[in-house]
Length: 285
Image (cartoon, rainbow, N blue to C red):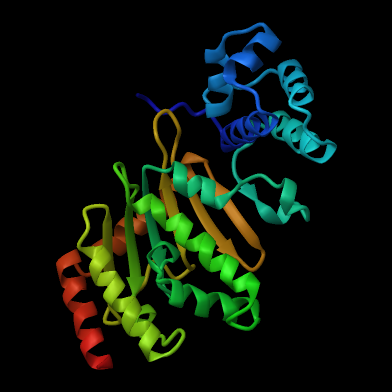
């Protein structure tokens, strides 16, 4: 099926929030369809993001579902801006009614290609490694409830890599990411063993970019490319201290794809990367 350019992330995210509102209200697709006097298939397409919901229908539905004023405003704004491409979280101070949920995008993708120069990618982290990273990043104690919750959420996110139809994940990491003693030597050794286990699965590919490369095309920092199911187009994602950025424009996504392809050519093969990680593990013994 061909990709449909008009199906923006805003339409998809609105559909997700509509479905959540319907389920929280306890209604079925048929209930909503009967209320609007349209087909259940149309309601399903609204929720999947393959059909833009007309504003009158949206107003009726959120009233029927009993959506609160705060969420109502966010959903109407999403629908009004459905034609827009790209999103930067820095555009709003209110992240609770913001545009995108990164976890939702991860779970929706069919394949994720990621470049991580400094740390082990989040979907590949052990709980102990995540705990250490989160504690330092939040500047809180390692046994705090906030850190524990973050670890729990990270573990839940990693379930997309298992199951009957796992999401395919291809990660390129720079050599220093394997040597930074996040949480101490014991945690790092456990993390390297975990990478070796994951690298042996059919759904995960781990490749290392060695320090011997004289020029790194990923100098601008980490990024991810989410390949979405038909008929949706791929999405590029970056995150900085200024916020998260989601990019949909073909030309912008293409730049990330070209950079990733270049990084892949410079990286060790999967087999060479496995040997490299094994040697790093031996050095820590």
